[in-house]
Image (cartoon, rainbow, N blue to C red; front, top):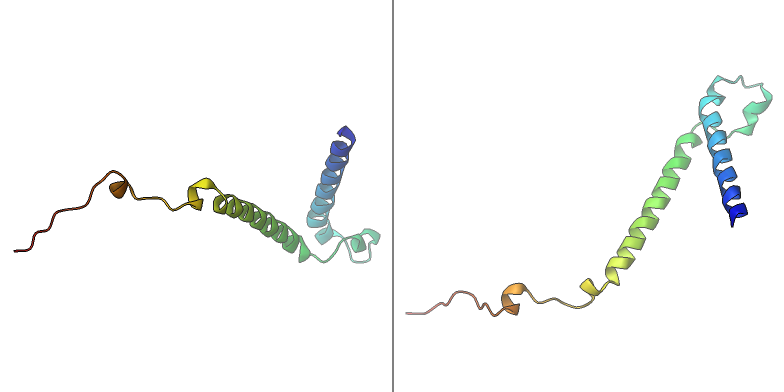
Length: 95
């Protein structure tokens, strides 16, 4: 299990270093530099984090919705407290 954690850590740190160098170094590299072509277009610097954020938020909201739909509180109809404790409302008499 430690090997898997170490692998995940190396992958995350490597991705972070690649992303930061893509974001910070590519605009200052000349187009004929050999490392210029290791990075995609500059517009994808903003598309990828937006896509990942949208994906994570949709997964979290779907999980919360699933939990709320399947919870005990929402599975059976609840009786309002005024009916539960015997309150019938004001007495109206017709004259």
